[in-house]
Image (cartoon, rainbow, N blue to C red; front, side, top):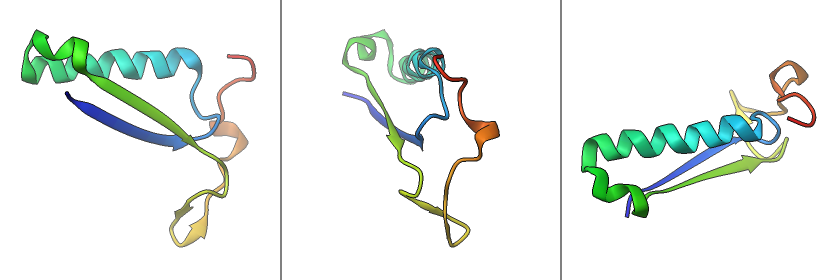
Length: 72
C-alpha cells in the first residue's frame, strides 16, 4: 500500500487544496504503480501548529500572508 505523509503549517491550506493534493498525489502514484494501487493509496496531510517546528535555526510561525482564507 503506497503511503504518503505530508506535513504543512497549520492553516496554510484550504480544504479544497488538501483534497487536490490527495487526488494529485494518488494520480501520480497510480502512474508509477498502475491503477491497482489507487484503492490502497493513503495520503496523510498533517498540520503542524505554529511553533511546532523550526526553520533556519528559528522556531517557525507561519506569516499571516501565507495562511488560507478564514472559512475556506
